[in-house]
Length: 196
Image 1: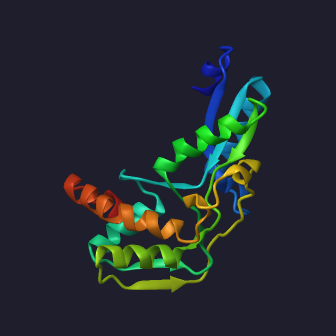
Image 2 (image 1 turned 180 degrees about the horizontal axis):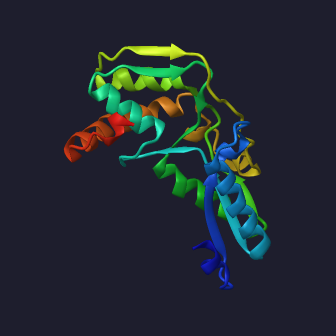
């Protein structure tokens, strides 16, 4: 699919993942890096935006949706003590992409879009538990992956009160979407996430 786009002379915008900075290489990360390299070597005008975990009103099998599913059903969850995640509101994806596109001198670049602060997996679970009024027990187990995301120059042009620079950004996203996700999962009547 990517190769079919690259045959045209149109500029290419590709959304990749910030997990490329993880020391733990997965087939997903390797695939994303291969696609990035393919685009860079084949297009003279490309923008690659690397995103962390995007949170919004969609049912999927990412960490937040999985936690919401378990917590809404008052089921126990285990979190790795060393795991940390950067969370990004889906609404901020468009806003920050537009901002970076306007501030970049070159139309070919790789840009990381992420908040300034990450959250531990336990903080994510605990915030969701409170937001949902859940009674689920949360068990902390050894292990977990954490990495820093280098931020691009575009952050220097942000207003000091931009939400992405706030230490409470992740908490506000979770409080905002927890009830929406719980209702979405409940209304679809599908427990695939709970079984994963």
